[in-house]
Amino acid sequence: MLKMNTKIEIKNLKKIFIRNKETLEVLRDINLVLCENEFVSLIGPSGCGKSTILRILAGLEEDFSGDILINGKTTSNSSSQFCYMPQKDLLMPWRTVYKNIILPLEINGKLNSAESLGVRNLIKEFGLEGFENFYPSEISGGMRQRAGLLRTFLMKNDIMLLDEPFGALDEITRMNMQEWLLKVLSEHKKSVLFITHDIEEAIFLSDRVYVLSDRPASTIKTVDIEFPRPRTREMLLSNEFLKYKDIILKSLF
Ligand SMILES: Nc1ncnc2c1ncn2[C@@H]1O[C@H](COP(=O)(O)OP(=O)(O)OP(=O)(O)O)[C@@H](O)[C@H]1O
Image 1: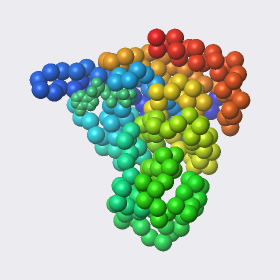
Image 2: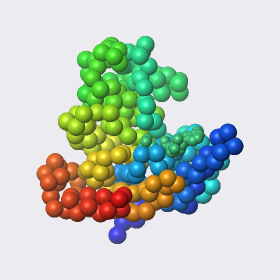
Image 3: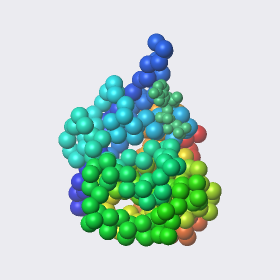
Image 4: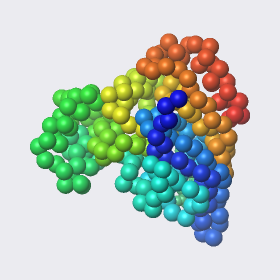
């Protein structure tokens, strides 16, 4: 079997928050692996610590214990290796869609014509063509999420950390966005660590799902999703899909 490169490996991750002298144990024993070009989801009860895992990876939380290996190496500054989209990835209301999207290029001083050319193609691919000069309040929720995702894409790293990007969307928009995301990812090689509350979304999108326990969270179940790619909506109706759903539900409750 072909050995895949490991992009992220987390071993025995623990995190305790201390606030006003009170401690809150959030992560007790998190173990997971994300390999190159894989799509891996984390699913678990609300408040169990899913976002905290991504925040630790993104370098936004300190004072944790355990090992985090990025591309096989322990690193003190992992944040620069990821494209991170937090749960509340608000677009700046005073900037147009285009100006919001190009923010990472602006920050990195890479806003030259070649980059802008690439950006124009991506805007088309992300279904935002014609809306470049609109303000976030003038576009739909799905479009806002696509703009947020494109901004994250432009951080130009090959590991994406996505914290519930479709959580606030209605069912139909959400399904369209899931299919769209898979299509985009099939064209741009990325390794994705994805948080969701939605079991069906996790199964539909992922190569592997890690189920987390209630807080303090531990990784209690690993489910390999063996559906071929490209994924189709018909898969949602198959017995195999129901079996995966049953396994995940039984681990959660
Ligand atoms: N900076 C902090 N200081 C103290 N407690 C915190 C801090 N950040 C998060 N927490 C607590 O840690 C716990 C886990 O939060 P986190 O956002 O990681 O959970 P989650 O699983 O992503 O939740 P949800 O699914 O509802 O988004 C919560 O109880 C939260 O209140």
